[in-house]
Image 1 (cartoon, one colour):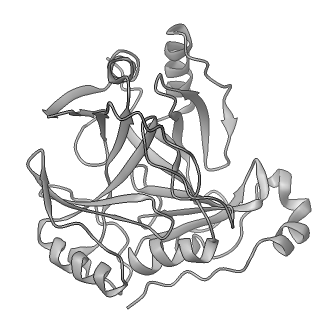
Image 2 (cartoon, helix red, strand yellow):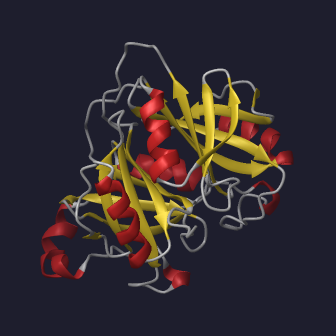
Image 3 (cartoon, one colour):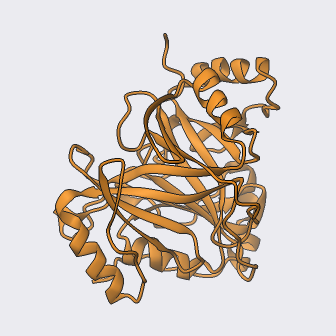
Length: 315
């Protein structure tokens, strides 16, 4: 069977202030800002991308920092934790680093044979660091955080669902995932070649509290597909299964389709090409504000609205 879904592509969340967001994901976590652009649907708002050195699918965390906005609320119908992969010997380093920047962390926990910690970013978004044995990705060697402790990319996205069965069926029947582990009310699925960066965990919750979107909540989860042709094929499968899939939308760095899964979470399927070097060289990714061609004539106005930001990895 042809592979149409490779695993995770990116996760996009909402944030409050842009500089605070940059300080957390670049300054503290040491991810590279690979793209400083705008929300194509709201050009007065940044769209900030953080990832490994070149923005490999499965490493890309993005944010819309809207400024002053109410915090979101974790609950059913929301991706509540985004997990990143680190080496087995890196956990103590990260606990000390996070505590040094006054980021409270959980004690080390065990899940599905892995050790991890939980914490939240400055807006309350759930983040996890999971130790892994065989993740050969290098992340971004930023020259500040020791190379052996670098965050490598995504490990897992956790979806909290009040009706898990329908979402399981979608992922298995239409999106080429398979269940690879179970523990309590948690089911782990993988796509493509499997392994870290290709996991989706579903947690069944009978909690009646429904999620509310706001600062610190995930806006959508994007899955990777290899080409425009494979995107068309998966779109036809989803449409035939009754999902209201959008037409293909040009996001400049990838092409996207969107739909809502049965629990209400917004899913995206994004192509790997053309990639993040389409409008700036790989060594200069994220250094300047990049606008899609259809907004370039509005650059002076847009630059006048967006606050200045600085991306530096903290010592």
